[in-house]
Image (cartoon, rainbow, N blue to C red; front, side, top):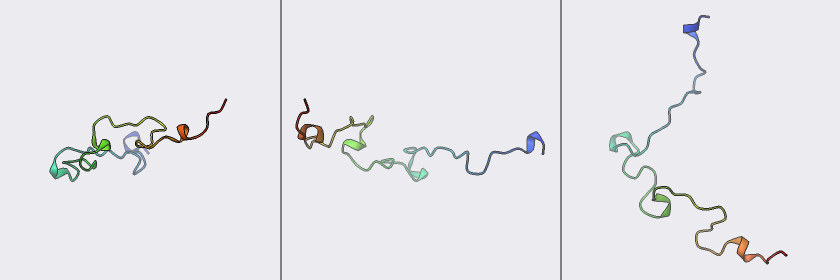
Amino acid sequence: MREHEVHPPKGSKVERFRVGRGLGSGNGTYAGKGVKGQKARRGYTVRPGFEGGQTPMIKRLPQQR
C-alpha cells in the first residue's frame, strides 16, 4: 500500500448540506423552517427553562430556603 492509495473510510467525510441555496437544491425557499413563528426567525435560541410563555416549572415549585 502506497501513500497515494490511502483513503478515509467510506462515509466518514460527509459534506454538510447547505440549506436555503435556491429552489433547485431541493431545500430552498424556507430552508426547512416552515413559515413564520419564533423558530423561523434568525438567531433562534431560547434560554434554558423557557416553556413557551407557560409559567416555568421553577416558578411553580415552592421556594426552598
